[in-house]
Length: 199
Image 1 (tube, rainbow, N blue to C red):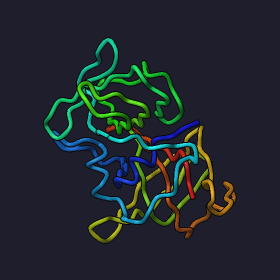
Image 2 (cartoon, one colour; image 1 turned 90 degrees about the vertical axis):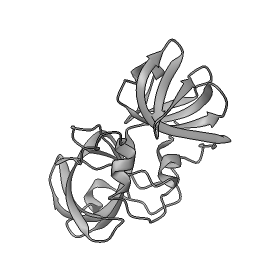
Image 3 (cartoon, rainbow, N blue to C red; image 1 turned 180 degrees about the vertical axis):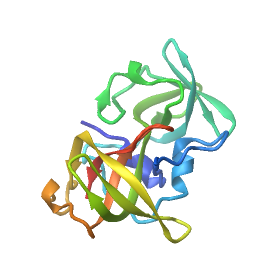
Image 4 (cartoon, rainbow, N blue to C red; image 1 turned 120 degrees about the vertical axis):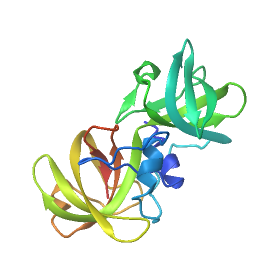
């Protein structure tokens, strides 16, 4: 299963929420999230991931017969799903699961339209320290890129994975108050954040 998750993370995407931070007008969730991300490197999401020659990101403003149209920094970019390999929206889904309002990171081949190979929807990253934890989630003191921290409630995704390929082994029992973590998170503006991978 190929995840684009952290191709996007190599561009420092991060998600935060609600207690969610909501994007301001014209701002994608990914951009809003960058404001609270830490600059530390992300682990690879999957050894099978092979970046394409180009990537685009933005918010879905229209669905088309064979793809979507993204608003990327005020510019509309048509994206074709004709060559899709994997779509990651908390878990692998069909391209038809993409919705208007989703924040996408798309890896593929440039052109008009842009030919998507891998898509990551509403995915980002946080780094921080666990301050509270229970059966359904945790309160994390998230490191801000600008300095300082902010508390964020992060639920556990039903698809959560622990650790990453080549990294230290990790289980749910290793997540304790005071532990410093990195996490791949899924979230949409106005909704809860869910951790899909923690290390």
